[in-house]
Image 1 (cartoon, rainbow, N blue to C red):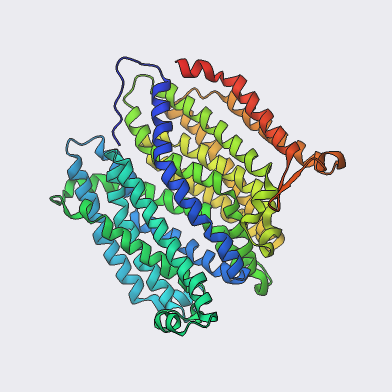
Image 2: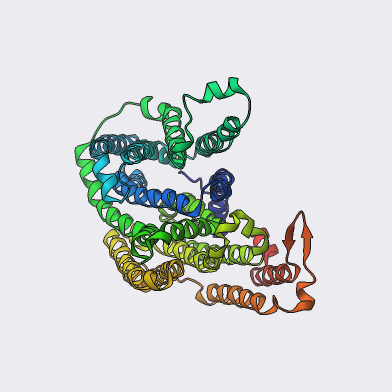
Length: 513
């Protein structure tokens, strides 16, 4: 992504505005699209029993690990070398060919041994699931490079459109197989039933979630054909070797990162003593994990815009000041999201079905965990810019060790609550460790007092809201609109936080800068 610097105005806020603009550009499509995609969760949690949805969660958890192997850090290497090499097309062509060849090999291997793999992950007789996901990962890995090329070239509209269409396809086919087809089968229209009979079977169940994903991924690959086939592709062996040296530590870091992000769902299935409820625990935990959607989406969309921004901004004379300001505003935004969700839990809880709401107590823990993950990503600029990517691998391995130890310890005792606390401890520890190591190799003067003040006040407001919720005179102030409860005292506290931040940052002076 190329940013054009305004030479007539050197204000350090300009890069932040550019980053905010890029986050909004990529984020609007991603947030709207993924919000629509996440709204499949209310459907899943009403169509499937918790133990059935647990199958979906476990399969996608395995996929996240495999996808890291499919991309092996090449995406970050692409941005890194595109800013260093004179021929960006050569970097793109080399990385794309590498991903295509490796994806074909990995997908073929998984399809060939699909039945054996299914048995190993405790889903014997469901080798077709492995085949579907092998194709999904192959398609998604290949399209990752054209999408990154669009980001680098600042073709945000095409990028956003294709991402949005990918999600719409997935939503459409999910609704078709899980809602429309069952309604037709229950009805009396024999003509429509004769049409869908060849393509629909109620016994497929959660399999239609995977089929919908496969169809949407294949259609996205077709739409990105111009970015793949309309240029002269060539492979530079020497360049590829340098990119692999840079990216392989990121592969280790990515794999360890997936342990931190998803291993809890896998371990819940295998570590809970009562196997009869283990799959249901996975389903409840996974559904409630997605209630922290706003924080997750903000971190994800920020990362999409921030990675190329950080590399581009590194050449600026005041880059470290920019990084410090970005961190401050990032934490402020995350603190607001945390309070926005927790102050309106009476509304947010409807995101999942009634059978899943017993797990909502993990939401504040996971919101804070994702906040720490976002801060860790901000801090990661020190080893990416300095070339010390091995430290990224070390930190992720360190976090993975914490995750595994705490999950093996806490899940058998506390169930999914143990998994949630393990996630928070892991990301918080990685965040702190990265900060102190980074200050040695790439010191940045982050405004820690201001950052910690926002976090402390946000947490204080949250605990105050818990304390006052049982006070009768305050609970009577709530409004009920369309069967949704609007918590007036909580939202008053949220407005208090906004006012504090407004006064602290003096936004009018920022606008004039």
